[in-house]
Amino acid sequence: MLYDASEGLEEALATRKITGYIGFDPTAASLHVGSLLPIMGLARLQQHGHIPIALVGGGTGMIGDPSGKTQERQLLSKEQIEYNVEGLRAQLSRFLDFEVRTNRAMLINNADWLANIPMVDFLRDVGKHFTVNYMLAKESVKRRYEEGDGISFTEFSYMLLQSYDFLVLYDRYDCTLQMGGSDQWGNIVAGTELIRKIRGTKGYGLVFPLVTTSAGVKFGKTEAGSVWLDPKLTSPYRFYQFWINTDDSDVVKYLKYFTMLDQQAITELEQTVIVAPDKREAQKRLAEEVTRMVHGEENLHKAIRASQVLFGGEVADLSASDVLDIFAEVPSSELTSETIAGDGVSLVDLVINSGFAPSKGAARRLIEEGGIYINNRRISDSQATIDRSIFIDGQFLVLRKGARKYHLVKAK
Image (spheres, rainbow, N blue to C red):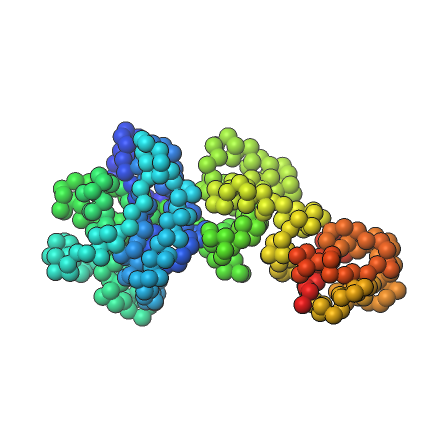
């Protein structure tokens, strides 16, 4: 997990308790799985007796970090930033212990100092320690300058703000370590330089690699977009499925990055990938560990139960929202209230309308041979009718042909 570090960090971590921080800019009301590796860095820091600080960028969020970007970020309003900060605060509390006495985690908002410092004071006390040549040489600025559409003074000043954050945390909390993604190395080094120049002491930097899949795709990006930690943006079921679908060539690496499992447990799971890859034991354990950590035990059980539905598990105890989430990508059709009123619609017609059979005769044979399931329960009566009472929450009916061919019927 170690990507790079300033000299002496390993000895400092091994010989004394230190305080380290990572900044999270509130560009959205939720973090996504791309943020998990830095978050786990803070969690591991605390696990080994050190003090972690999660710095929420209520101040820097008003500027925008140019790192990894070729275009200017859209500026957010103060109200939107405050809303996003609260969302991040709730999510980070799932990973860090803010109650333990010996090395209690801290959650701090840099707006506490950045929103109040006079500009002239900032330029005099901080800006004078950085040359323009030094700032232009940093990768985040150079890339924007060479490949993008230029960089505004607003984002150009981001490095100074992040450096000042490090200085303030050093002064107030004896924080000597800043961590972050590898794209933050230039900003982190600038912070250690500011501490050295103003305080005459040493600060440390540690960055984590950019995580990609074995296919070279940026981790956390799917066809449906980002995988969020907020259950309203990415449901626990879809979150669980994201990890279940991890490729064999990536799963051991992800177990090391994103879980607290010990080396022996991971080695044993690695063996299952080699000898019995079809069982996907490593993927299941990965999905369980991360989903539990992000969404809690109850939502993990719901996600597992929902996943089992696709393999013929019980449907009746699911809610309409669960069904819609699980079967969002399967073919679907609608029935009007009039169609299913009274005696309802014949199962034969339902099978034909779903495309499971080309004719009434074929539909009857399919039903009588046990090939049709309603809400994952076999129906072998070709004379059966379907009314509203069978629909889950009065809204959805899951029609299945054979082992895995599904069709979702919606009551309009």
